[in-house]
Length: 187
Image (cartoon, rainbow, N blue to C red; front, side):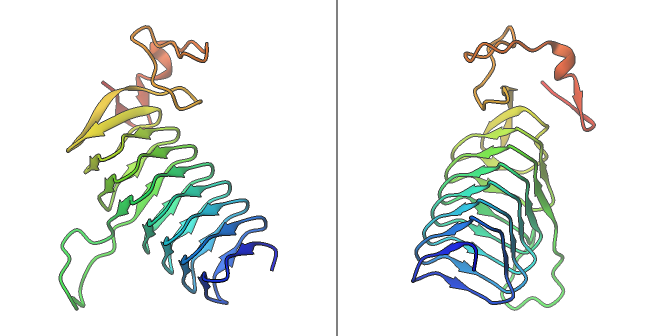
């Protein structure tokens, strides 16, 4: 075993866990789950079979990553984020449709956000804490609210850019950087 597993963590032998990953207290990793290298999966989190977690991902406390959810490299997922994988859930429903959700590389999802199924959160996007995301979020977009809507752009460092598209870290962007990304028109 080339990863850390807390003594209370449940990890199925058929789960794939990358080198250097840390699985903390009361995590539950199912057979068929894939977790990359150097991840930090915090207390009480659940990763279901069919879920894919990239490298260098942080998943904070009490997050369930269900079948159909793919989380890219370098993503931060705050505590109690709820990923949904069934748009019309019913108990013991046999004909439900799995809708895949993709979280792009370097994105941040704030604590207590709800992420509807069948959407994509773009690379380096930022979703604010407590938001309800019901549609795609473009790369580098900052989205928050209920329902979440785009309120601006984010720097690679994760901070929101000001109106002149400058970050407090000193990096300056131009409108050409954000006009259209992956088919999304921003703002």
